[in-house]
Picture 1 (cartoon, rainbow, N blue to C red):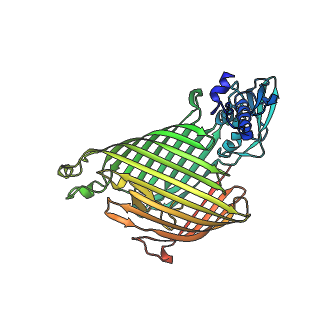
Picture 2 (picture 1 turned 90 degrees about the vertical axis):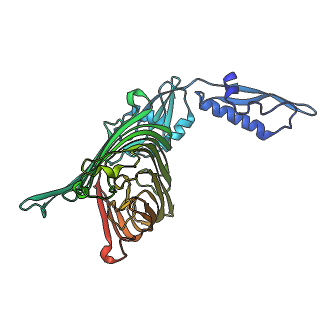
Picture 3 (picture 1 turned 180 degrees about the horizontal axis):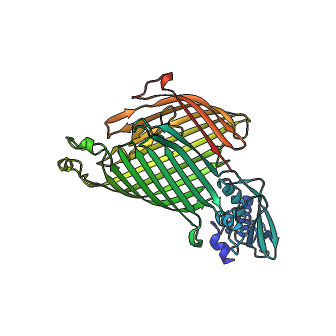
Length: 474
């Protein structure tokens, strides 16, 4: 039929006069069946009829029976998940009324592995009735929501007869109301003048489209030095079961707090007031066996952004220090994070990580650089220890598993960081150590002992770091 001829990559596999090829006609049959089962005809049958062999040739008629036209009906959940079937249908690209596609059903298993708040406990099943196909998904909910925090009351060493309130609060809610809505709130205050706040929200398939809308706000107050705020708006789209792309607009603002210290300065300080509007994209691909705790496969995320940064004059700084400086300039940044996981037999595995980033501008400031260090990047150093405009580091982490998500680990982190704001051309931090990741009934406990060496931190037991954390799940 004409629609089949249009969709065939090579519609004339068996042209007259060519040497007969059994593989050629097999490929034609396979292509026809593949087109049928992915365009609403899963019961299509193709065979040869009226086969004739002459002295120098062979001829036959291709007889095709399309069978009934089948469309998708609904998605039904056979596990204990409270996720709404309509959300999973959109996530998997299985829309009621559209032509049946066997490929979409097969891709459903891959897509389900990339949804963090559910786990697949079997293979999707099909039933055909009244020229409609119903897809049954055996999925269970995972304990991924978390709520934990700690409050500390300490004597205030700066203000007499007063108490200092410190602490940390984390709230992560995923798949709210079974519709894929995510909400995250993180607050941290470890000293009197420093604190960090991060708020995120995501709404999938906004206004009935296939687009996801998310927004985030971040506030960082670094002692009495500077205050940063950032607001980001994202629009995302699922390209395939394993690939996701999003486009963002980001507004960043930084303000100098310690103004009095620069009243008599002879040059512009490394920290200054700025406003930065950037636009860019993030591309993520996940080909792992488990999106939360992968043991096999690889995943990668790359972000690129570019925009104009405006340098603002602070009234507390001598105005002549701003003379001859370009107030508005173009700034870009790029970051990539890649991880590879491999597991041998039952107990042995390894994680290899590669991470890099670059940022450039004619007026780079200390308060808009990347921040590295700590449990999630280069271990053996305090959180956000390094200021850098260009970095690269690798993580090598052998693991010994003694449970589904429990394992002992050894690690080595090796990196290279540059900070042209403070004229640090190259610094080679290195760290090593070991630790434990322990799955409990209430969540995941992680403990890491690390020793690190960099230009400003020598190697020694008195400089070692203990990183630990507990993530409660419900």
